[in-house]
Length: 341
Ligand code: KG4
Ligand code: ZN
Image 1 (tube, protein in one colour):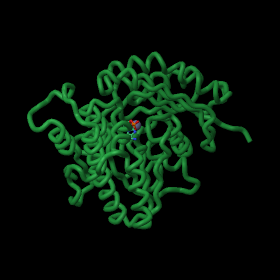
Image 2 (spheres, protein in one colour; image 1 turned 135 degrees about the vertical axis):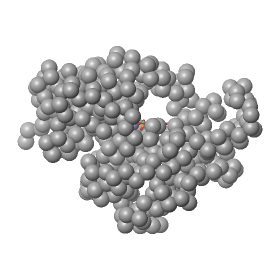
Image 3 (tube, protein in one colour; image 1 turned 120 degrees about the vertical axis):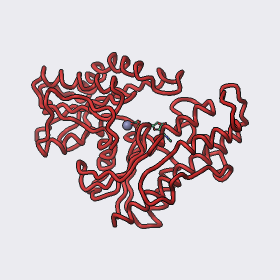
Image 4 (cartoon, helix red, strand yellow; image 1 turned 45 degrees about the vertical axis):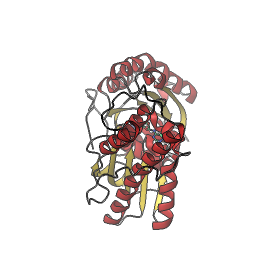
């Protein structure tokens, strides 16, 4: 049978990525250029630095994915690009590249919601349908819960009212002078720490709504490290065991809240299926705790494979679902940076 591949483009934050995906969802080629080294010195993603790096890398990344797939642009049936949400400058680079190639190669254009794509990564690793399900996105920019009846039909239940879970991991990492991004580093140290060393707050854990708040937790971690008042973390010498205990107690507080809200959502929506995507879903302790809960409460759990948790273009395979619905974008497609749900 003829393979009808699509090209997907991802540049919402600090990874420049492209993939060529066949119409049955198989990955034929893919490339990710990470900008971690560029942002490390700032301990956070600097939007203008990110946009410029995307501009340098976007065409080589697309070229690599297409060459790896051994297809010619003629073979492509559509070009899909993430146009929401994300950093404005970063999104612009991917969207302009996608639109330009779509016009030059005379291909239809598909608009991708980056958050929906994060959740779709769970369907990609599952033989049977994961719908209907409760979907949790935990990334650097978002912590959101949905009730999903299909990859494209998502009802927003709630989300963070301040920091995202990944942002909290990154900020705690920065306070402890760990590498960037902080999430994986905090997670590594946490494995050596005592999970009940500090009684950090679990904000909103008992409230019936599905919103989250992680800024109080972040402040509590800061006070645990420095005592109230002192701001300058760079001059602090913190004992390694204390660092590990802080990381373990912090990570446990985050996962406790996420798990508790997911359990509540599953119950309220009488749902037996939970899916989790986004960078923080790569966290080992989170995966263990949710797997234990799934056994205990008897719900089916799909967490995206670790390499599809962090930003990538393969999850852009959700474009195939839109193409099946005949849902194409026009060539005046704009970016939507601030979309929250
Ligand atoms: O989904 P993602 O790659 O980008 C966004 O769409 O935001 O998520 C990046 C976030 C960062 O905050 C990073 O620290 C966090 O995911 N992260 C982790 C782990 N791996 C990545 N957080 C905790 N534990 C991890 N193992
Ligand atoms: Zn993401």
